[in-house]
Image (tube, rainbow, N blue to C red; front, side):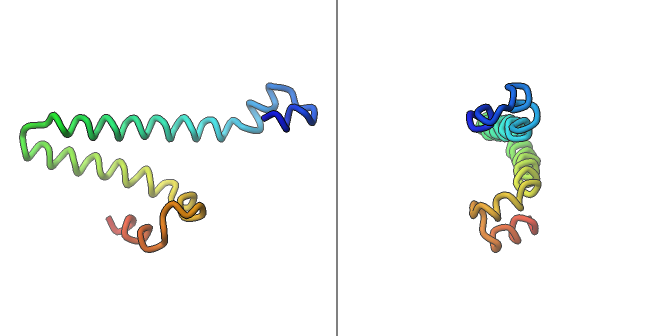
Length: 91
């Protein structure tokens, strides 16, 4: 952001036109992380085996969907290899 300010961009231009997408992506990733952490915490408290199995499946679908949505990013940055990506899509 400092670089953009040095070349004459106003704070509004920097925040709304240059880094807005990055900030929104960061907020989304943070929210998804909190959601997944709460899912894991919830599962530790479920007593009924059938309910636990069902909720585990629901939470896994959510987590896999989150990763698949940004799979291109993860592949380009080496966080996931192609083999793992193919297995994830099959999952």
